[in-house]
Length: 78
Image 1: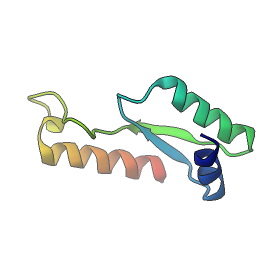
Image 2: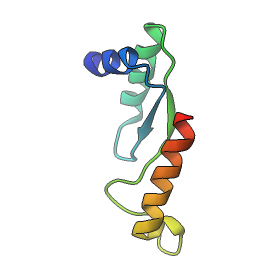
Image 3: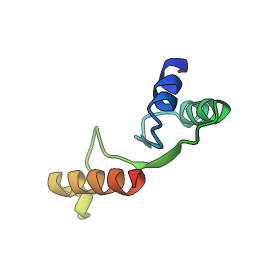
Image 4: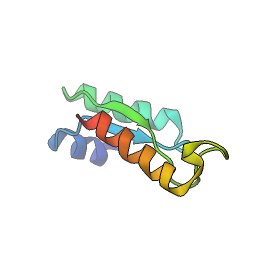
């Protein structure tokens, strides 16, 4: 965790993204570690990685899933 905090702080990365399989406590520890070093990092949104969205939604198709991920990343890093 310390190495990841160092990486984010040194590169001034301002957002990280979650995937539903990552425990919340790990993400909270990451954000708190960055804050303790004077760098604010936010959760930029949830990305699809292991599965697509629900059937019948735009994210339920491959192209819709990719579009969602790209839009989420771009919005968070502006």
